[in-house]
Image (cartoon, rainbow, N blue to C red; front, side):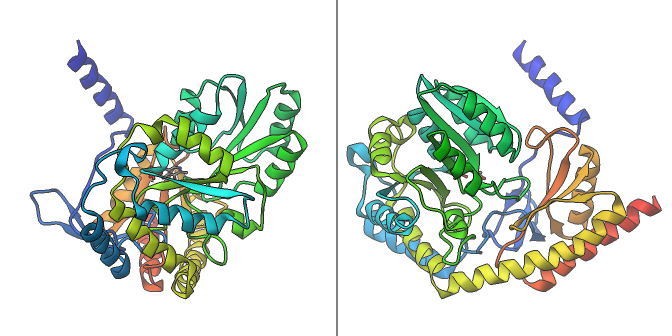
Length: 404
Ligand SMILES: *Cc1c(COP(=O)(O)O)cnc(C)c1O
């Protein structure tokens, strides 16, 4: 019976060191956060696991804008965008983002979604109709995988960053609508998709590129406009998804694409149509965070993030080699320390936590078998001393492992 089956599955997960547990944060998302059970005194931890890359989730101006937005527009939107939930704040946010993307996508408009997961479901199901083919990068985020599963299109997968394999698939395809689907910054590895080469293929084979910049928006580019700005790319063929709960520090996501694509999404994308619009106050807060991202403060925050990344990589390269682990080829805020074994990566995470440092251990199925890892994420709110403390703690854990 059901409960027996579920208990068995839970026991099996436990045995494979795959059980997942939620922890409770008692304070705001920040490098120094109090974490614990609901009924116990929380423990102060130095954290390296949020995606709040610019430290805006707890920024006074963004918090003030959220409160101001609530006073102006109320707590909730009351309905979906097409009924009565579409507010001035949502419209202003979309207009500002359209301005950001004008240099990168001719005739760009944007559409705001409650979450990135929903934006990806929307784009893949609304464009990936019968007769279309989705050419999916093998390390795509789960939300792109789920969107492709739900879409009626044919789905073909190509190996990680393998443009030659992708070209072979495109060349062999007779599909009337070809859509390349990829993360920009890969969420568990931190490396960046070869978008310039993908664009050349898209032009050669008349394909479109759906690019999910969840970990690039706000972080990459001189003005923080994301991966297209960083690589200096511009094409109507880009259908860009940026998320707003990571570097932008609030919640939601947007699609930037040719106005005809946006018009199609508004009219046909079920994850857009059949859900209550996010609170207008959230959009109002996002306008404040966009101002920070694009301005001098954003530039300084990105520079601080880059300093932390350089310091961490320099220290980790030595430590990983001494422990027989490997450091990912990443220049971004996502720095994977690949341990391999599930239990060993959990043990390393636990050892760090005993020393007051929180880093997530990522295990299959989120990453391939045998590549369990610590996923270290850095943010602009970290300082050099925080990074040094992490390096010292990892060094200590390695010394303990060798003594044991
Ligand atoms: C986090 C993430 C998403 C989902 O965005 P949410 O706004 O958190 O739902 C989509 N794609 C990638 C690559 C992500 O990392």
